[in-house]
Length: 182
Image (tube, rainbow, N blue to C red; front, side):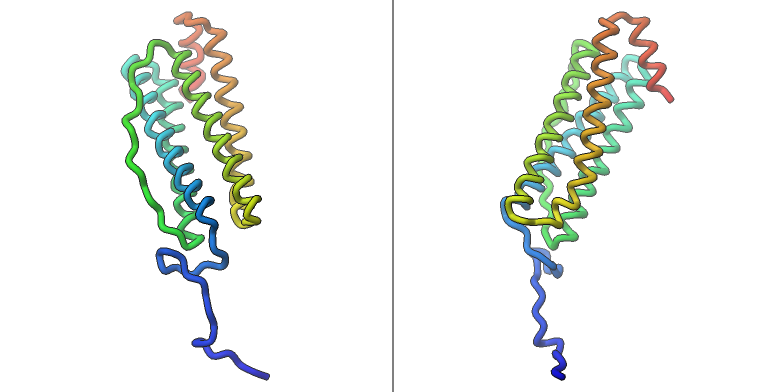
């Protein structure tokens, strides 16, 4: 029986010097970084929505978007953690200031729904890239993320529908605000 000496064992090392079980395709790493930036941008925009509603004494809407901002930060952190776990460096890009001037609650929810839809599309593209490169570690990571994102997109579609139905009527919007203030 032959015993291997530690010097004869070879372990792949990522850009940070961390051991890697499997290298990641550059296309996937770049796309994961872009998605991480998208999550951080969504967090900043939701925080901007939070402020817009707080300034108008709509505490339920404000609370809802503050929580969404925090959720997007968690998502960004999960992507950063995943990149690190795979031996990659995390590159944080500069974020643009979120838009803060809105003419209606409906416009905000249209923008929010579109952001959620864009995030869903980005996740599907990540999944396709991972599959194309047979990176099953990434598809396993993305499966529950995509499910959660689909649920989030559904929630925003529902809230957008309620806000549209309210038709900018203050009493109806106050009821929705009250429902969100739980």
